Image 1 (cartoon, rainbow, N blue to C red):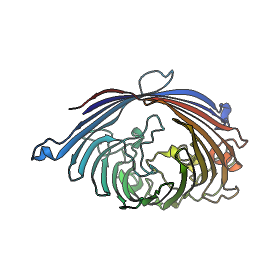
Image 2: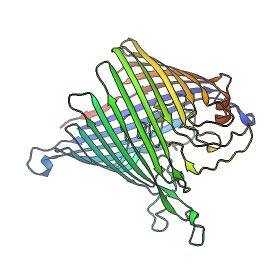
Image 3: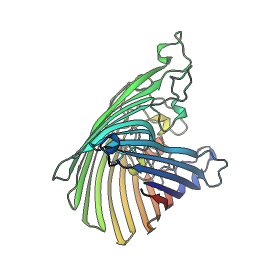
Image 4: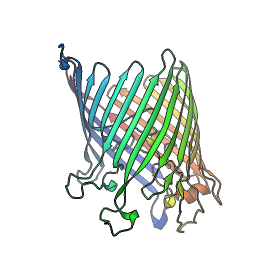
Length: 427
């Protein structure tokens, strides 16, 4: 079977109050973005033979897209987003190699991050087994900037923002308990990060020499989904050594409960806690502050779909804090959704946001965020969504994020998504 699909995604944003407007810069922005994506899916099922061809199916996918802000000059946004091939045996064993979008559990740690117009994909080899309620995946990645004979072992992560790791080994296991709506996942990751300077030689200090520092993540995700409610939770720990040789001891935990009395409305409540670094003081506006860590305790969310969590305005874990400080986060939230008619969904959410680190001279509360969103499917291939968020910040928010605390933090957006299937052939 061959399928060719197209996506035309138009996205617009209006931001106001995100910054204090330092150096006479305006804190307001209005812009339109566009993503044009062409997808080719190919699948060849096993043949009716008794040899190897009768056991293995072949699947491949190629996705190319172009990204631009309306009015942008040039074609710098063209990219191969996915390009992979997959072989699957009837026993459940499979092999998948190439550039691919990865999605695991609730996408908190590994996800395609599709809200971002560029999204996120990885150049990896994936091996695994799926069957009888079990799913086991092994993901292997090794990234370089070029195939040069000389200097081909040093990886400059600034040239590959989406894949900052040099090596990545991931083990993921999921089990669905029979006759019980319970799912359990375990995740283990080992990432090699390039450290040192490329041109440093043996006369340089040891810290400058090219080397690979390894960081580990270990944790799990649990879901329990009866008919009208669900409970999910996760816990992860990070260990290892940073690129500058500092030990990492960070962790995070989350819990969420959802109640759905009927198919057209429901409620949710949850809490996220992400550990943060110790901090000496918060410099006043215009001041310079340096932080020296003996241990890194700020949790790194790695390669997840960050926009799904921690508030839709993306103040946290998308943009950095002042001077690179990571105070962690406490995110308590409640929400509700309602579908008053077919194809229309309305949502409202509230977030209480605070640092995880106790600050020397500031309250831990960062602010309160309220989000409103509506989505409507005009037809199978066309959907429209829009949202508006506003946040009342605190002095802590102002000094850590350089964001206004006077209640003028506002953000509005809309998206028009057109995704037709252009051609399908079966044989």
